[in-house]
Length: 117
Image 1 (cartoon, rainbow, N blue to C red):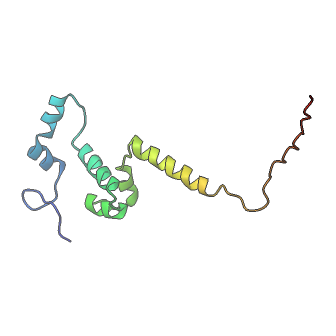
Image 2 (image 1 turned 135 degrees about the vertical axis):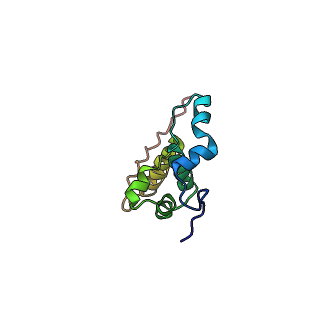
């Protein structure tokens, strides 16, 4: 299995390689954030998951031995959580039609008005 991306010497891309190639620490400090280089892995894997990449493929990309480890890297945003709730509500609403007799309200008898002249 060949790597999609490799470090400068053909090996794995480590956090040190990313640090040196991107000047990540300086960029983060200049922007006023406190994120770590390692957060790039979380962000990248989350974006790929949001794009539809299957978790077992993400596991291989990340080099994790376990799907559980990969799942800890995935952070859905509020929009994704809201969409999941709406999908569940729509699914549950589809099953609300219960077969069998239905209660039909009785029609009220019409009262005839007497015309008085």
